Length: 456
Image (cartoon, rainbow, N blue to C red; front, side, top):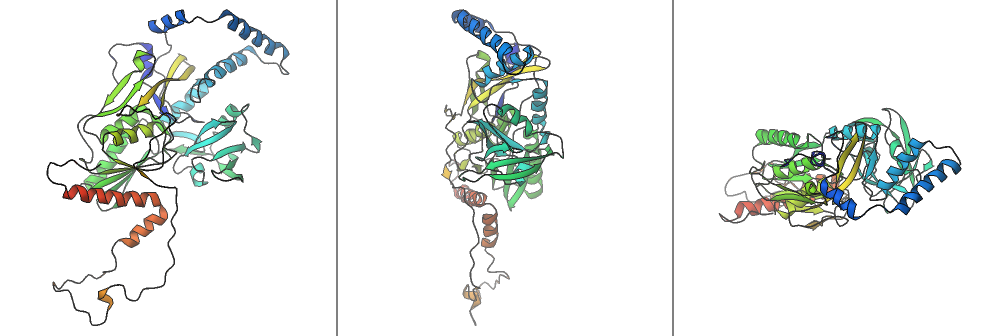
């Protein structure tokens, strides 16, 4: 990210975040030790001065709490609580960070910390699941996007203790915790005993679905996501040759760093806008464009999304959709269309505050709306139906049948690929449908007249 002139605000905006609100929020390390208010911000303060009556009321409340609250509260705790309350009252994403909070945020950009691997949002005195991270205790326990944590170790989650409950999701490796979960569309809570682990999130996984069809899974957007994608996809192409198409899986991806989302989008685009951000400060108004160079040379793409696909993941989905580079399949995404910036106060404290809205290349804000898929898929599971053995399935099974005039005999004539397709469908219905659509796009691309526009 480049800025024409240096300012503390601009330097801090280099750590822009696009994350779902987390118990373990993600960010990059703070860029400066302090932040000075820009001239136009000072001008705004001059035209909208703080009312002296409001200051007096704050002072009175402060003193009442100090003198009359049932337990003694020290001044430092009161001030921290006042600041935290001011920020949390703005939106679900802005917060005050102390030394411990900054350390946790820094850990998350590398994908390494001790906890459960769960991304959550405080909603009406409870903790709503945004997404579990792949291969973590939360994911293995069957926690899904849309579930709600209503108790931790038997203690109910409420609006009064939600911040403390956030912290309990993390802890020492090997320590135990029991979450009482209310699954989405269920009215019966279940207790899930979990053991905290050292979470080392590998954000990119690449494998072959079938010959010439690749699968790329991005679980969240970290510092190393873009180079890791380029490395792993490059190795697969070098080993197996050019791909006819890829499925990019962004389901239950809670977001991460804006720069990582831009890098991943750029990896599959030759040109066009990726995302723009707009805020009150001039330095928050940014425009990111793609550069020439597509990792798969224009081969068709399908992007899988669901209601756990949030923020930075929505940037990628929106960029590929609006540039007609990929088809989006699945369910409507989460709809977090605002950007947080870490503004340091000193070496041990910072403010993570919403500074801008972001817009897809078509100029659309997805805030509280999400991205509507091109092809909608319900959250379904498929089971293979029981059927009696078929004795005669083709002409080749008939006694005394005529042989093929070319003299060719397929030793496994009944293996038409349907068995493999059925296996994938029972494992992951959405992925099997995405692969079928991708194959159709690849066939269309193969027969398209020279000079015709490529398929989406």
